[in-house]
Image (cartoon, rainbow, N blue to C red; front, side, top):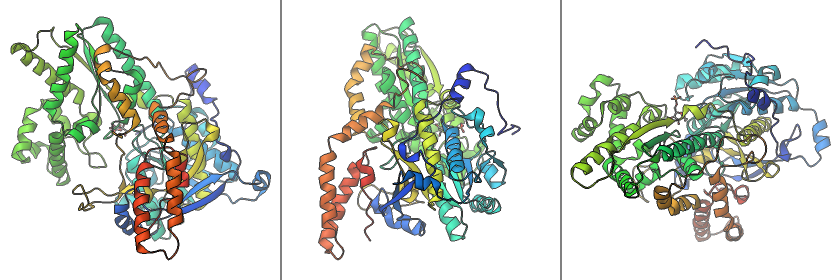
Length: 619
Ligand SMILES: O=P(O)(O)OC[C@H]1O[C@](O)(CO)[C@@H](O)[C@@H]1O
């Protein structure tokens, strides 16, 4: 790739120039050159039944404590202390996500405030630049034209993988050759799982570099009791919500098209869900709902056709349907087909021979699909072994099958309305390159600053986190959570007899179908379907009213949680009182079961109690 990464770029647009001047707001604890690190209890994993497997895979980094950062008691004295210079490298590992540049900026500013002799290197071309030691020193001059700007073009990116022995060894060689004290890896679930593995291997090889992960992904699927949301999700939802609401108004104006809109976000449907909450399209099909109800492709088509028919009875021949890009993998028979194709890929079967090597039922399904979908399903896999979801035109598949079914219903006299007409869109890359919202600018910058304090505190195998994000920035709470505490292992079977298989990793978290936000959306589903209750959130606001708007789910899910505070506090103090050194096995068992139900509840994101609740490590 022949791009001059790191070169100052001309900010041609007035808005770009204005945004470059925006100074992200900082939570109080990050305002000085140092912080005080408070260590909590040891952790286990979010799925305690996998704890042993994770502990075995991560003997050096499993069970590390939660760490929260607070302002030093005597800020002036702390600022006057002498601090060593630090050498840090930063790499864009995951896909572009609005706000990513601000992580680098925050890291740079914190590093220079910590000790002006400190050095920050950015790896040019992402992970491939890391493997090849293609580093660029990041200075304030380099950063100037990238502050608060979209894209990852400051440094570029390549693959979201630091996994094979060769890749890990090359990364380690670079850390050694640049004498790095820390390496900051920016990305989503895959990149952060790899960050955990790299930190473990560096310890095993006596490499001093501390590895820190930063949750940056438009998908919003890196979400657990430590991480409330990822950098870029807010912006991407705002941009896509505007686009969806624009097509809603277009649809109702002429009354002749059904718009089928697919939104990015990979396996979990968070982006599609948030955008539906913001713009109220007529129909939304979530991957999580389909997977739970095991809806087949034809059941989904019939559901959409029933909606089209119900609207036709009201004289409406337009509408908007929103789907996540991961829908295709949630449909049981499609998932099974994709799995077969993945196995063929893993066995290096040439693409041209794949269709002939499918099992009879998979081959039949494959042949039923239109040629464009067949071609797309056979594309090489992503680094997490899933299909290339962004490249599969599921919206076109649905539109095609709905049209066929509506023609059939017409012929059979079951549908007497006008001809069904569709227009398809995939909104993905358009939003991914957007100028980040104020929220993403602030959040990313804070995470960058936290990363430096993590390295200075000698933490490795941790992720930078901020809690209380729904509140104003001065209420944000900064912390570091062990990456292993977010890990689980995929299982063979459901239920108590399930056997964990595969590598422990951080898995995408799905939409909570028992959550308040989902309940709200379901309550409104029939009104959305029939009433054209479209909402126009408009474009991102950078100043004035609306500039502080947060993702709707962040606010709703937190409200959901508020009612339970007292119960949780009480439960927590009971557990604490029960477990004493030398207590009986029965008491331990009772405490474990209370803790399990408590951690279940606390999986709901963003609650002040999160930081108070240690994940106990019962041996
Ligand atoms: O840029 P690429 O390789 O097409 O990546 C697309 C993928 O990246 C994401 O935008 C972010 O993970 C996904 O939603 C999408 O499937």
